[in-house]
Image 1: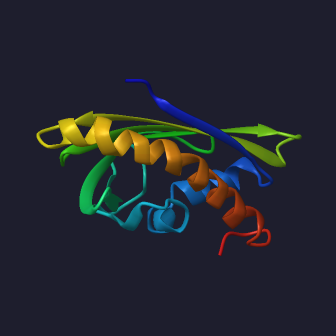
Image 2: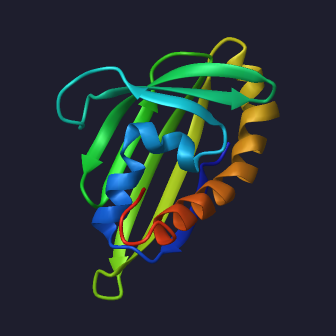
Amino acid sequence: MSIIRQSIDVDRRPEDVYGYVTDTPRIPEWQLSAVSAERLDEGPFGIGSRVRVTRHIGNRVMPMTMEVTEYDPPHTWGMQGVDGPVRARVHGEVEPYDEGRRSHVTIEIDFEGHGVGKMLVPLVVRRQVRKELPRNEQLLKDRLEHAGRRPE
């Protein structure tokens, strides 16, 4: 199966975009399937940090633990699912343009299924994410561009 990849331009500085997409409690604000998101550890956010994201997948609600595998503000971030039947691998990039006043955001997602997840990934998850990712990026853009000069 291939990686799902989507890009969008956002009329905000890379630092603003990066800060928003890596702010765990804000995940449900711009990701349609996310019901909740919380940090599982304390201290500075970075490589090794863990996050629990609870998502609607098909007609199920599933908690997933993600570990930060890449953290290079304000350029790239990455996360890997470490438990549950569906484990996502996420890579994000924020590229500056227009002399750093705007950002080109690219998000790539791939999945690994375990147990029942081996059936869910091809039948439900990939389809759902292919539809959802463009909408998520549009929500991200709308939230950042219409929140004034700071995210709410």
